[in-house]
Length: 558
Image (cartoon, rainbow, N blue to C red):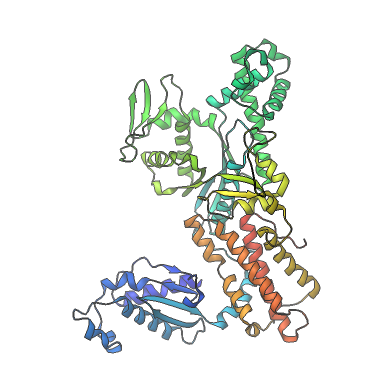
């Protein structure tokens, strides 16, 4: 049982003995190590529900003097809980100290012996270290990237790739069965405009270039590819027919490019959903939707929601065509039927779409809490101090492929994951390529390769009989403490969706390892060599598993 779960169970059982209806108990890892390895505010939540029992009046006689109504105070309850758990675990060497402090916090300090023993437990767990089972094999869907189909994948949309992929990895690490999904928007007005742009690119005498909807060298390339696919048949097509077929062909060409870019990012989708297929199901699904109305010859979604009362949305236009929102409702009906948890990763420009989508999920009869949406902000590309705005290929934006080709998959993913999704990013190409410690991905990967190098020098060493009780130095104990955080971070990110916690954690572990290795010899240290190699093995496993969640390689050589 994990320590956090152990503390939760013990606090719940002790409160039940006092006849208290157990509140939601928060267990946190204090940022200041002086406040313990874990801390809980449970006493401040539960104290109002307790009349002071006689046993506490005997144990804390000052209570009777200061509390005429015998109402429990937070610190009193915290002292009681701390003492009860201290007595229970006195002989088990898990906690060095459990104490009540401040206005009623309970701080838990892990014992040195417990920390030492966990090195062996991490080694035993291996690739499974950090795994938890809060998902209980429930099904989860994560949809991400789902880029604009009319152009190359740009760096803004590409940010959703690593975010969604890591969210899927985290959910798998937490015990969910995950499906990675991509929505291919292969129909609609934008596809028609793309076809027209290709038509005019091939017939420049019919429309001034500046009036063509889509610009950039990629349109010239597309026009050539589309013309080749249409062949001699294109001569018999009028403008409307040519544009229609050209748009359909072009979005499939671009779709393949987008999937190739995703593959270069280390992303492979389990399922691709096509909008044209969703539209076929729209008539039947929309019939079952609550809160619709006819107005101006169109069908509208008009949820009975205070926030959305002035934001009614068209489902079927007056010409009988179903909108993208109608397709999205069909898609989310499918996802909610097939999954226990549905996660959408969208750009911040979709923020207005989220409340409508949640209202639609509710109108379909599902619990809207089943749908979770991660919104991410935009990315600026820098080269040193220079902000880059234009792409040679795309014209008015930087493509994901240009950045990938310059910095590589690992730096691409790590740099896009270093900040909360809600934060804007300045992506520095020069820093991402730098082979030095101020490049965070290099710094972390170097730590892993450095450990591999040490083991290569050590040769085949059996670590099973390592005396872990010899790991007593400050740098050793601090490193072990931090190695034990991985499963806690997995659990936190499932709810917070702040996957930058893993880049910060990997950097922190790398820093503590480098600090330990610079302060202490490992090889040729007699009885200290094996336990220190065991500590390095546990560090190597933790780094590798963290990088695996991030989709970043853990190299053995650099």
